[in-house]
Image 1 (cartoon, rainbow, N blue to C red):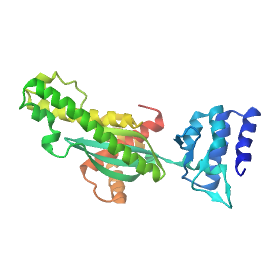
Image 2: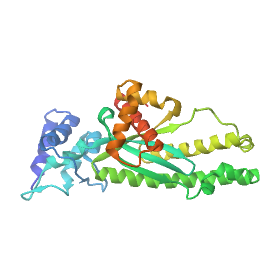
Image 3: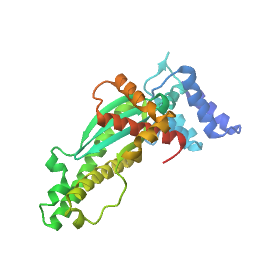
Image 4: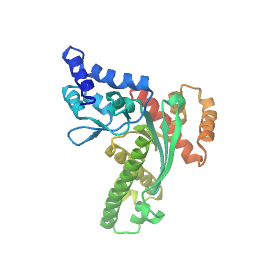
Length: 292
């Protein structure tokens, strides 16, 4: 049957002593470079959908065996399904999501790497609450008996996390369809100081504001992790210096690079998008350097 000889060829290579990861690399990444192709969808016999990079990570006899049952939906040349079309998503562009959160919502900027030549591929506003009153749960808690305030904050945080997770999943799917793989995220964070118990927070207006900010950053980190996206919290006071380091430039040149990025991406490009982009740059740089 068309294509099966190619599948068998991979198995013969493995039987000859070539390591399975190298066999898969030759059949995917090498072919992708030759064909200059970027998109493909493969379906493996267990009913799950895998990108070729995921098959490569499986990198063993199971992966080689699974290739026998791969079917391709987007490349048919003269009626022959080419094994090499599976290489396309090996060339997917890595993307980091930069986020700057507020009470009830967050700005998101998606940067396709590498960091030094990154470009904006998406900008979003993710709403976790529909009104300020709904989102400002610590403020609302100040008006309630303690037990009710505690219950409101807990249930609201769970709701906000579900909403954020669904929105991020949708964004990830859209980016994958465009040939981009979300691999990391960077969130502009506070100073990292631990907050006191809830009873103390509710007695202080300043602490209430701090707690609101921490709640949404916590929600977004968990939502990212639930979507399989590594999350990095970046203190706001460090963000410019660390972004310059990720880009390999002097801090004095950062403003110009940020303005250039915004000019290419178009509006909106206000403070939220700029800080989100800085966080995204840092996340891409950390990914390249193997840091968390």
